[in-house]
Image: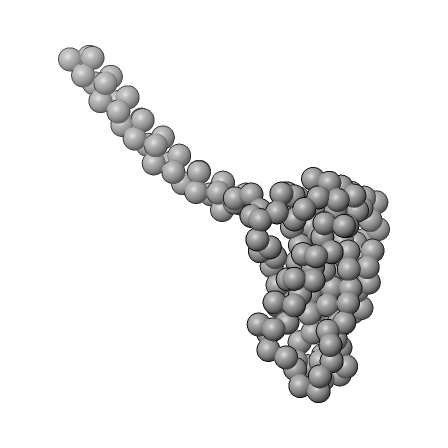
Length: 168
């Protein structure tokens, strides 16, 4: 009788661990996700250029950059921990009308991917690093903003120093 109670308890504990293990694995997968694929899957972002001007070499705190608070300073000394590093800035070909978001995203994805390898020193498809880009909104476009800024980041956390030539 004692054996049956112990066996039943063991089964109950194993099921509880198994169920919680699924949640843990799912949570870990969501937090860390799959490794980058060979196809650029950069996260498009709306440009903060209507509020601030980004330049190649700027290191940034991403949360401060994207918080929509004009008083928050997103710039960080690259020697200090930071989330993003602008590795290329370029202007979209200016037409009078705002291009479609799909057109801007396609252009920015291609341009940022093409500059990634020379900057990082490793092909985007095999690097653990990723990139994000910021582009003009309709409002900032109307005010003359044509700038796209590509920023490299480590999806596993903040970095200290430049990612130029990091080759990982």
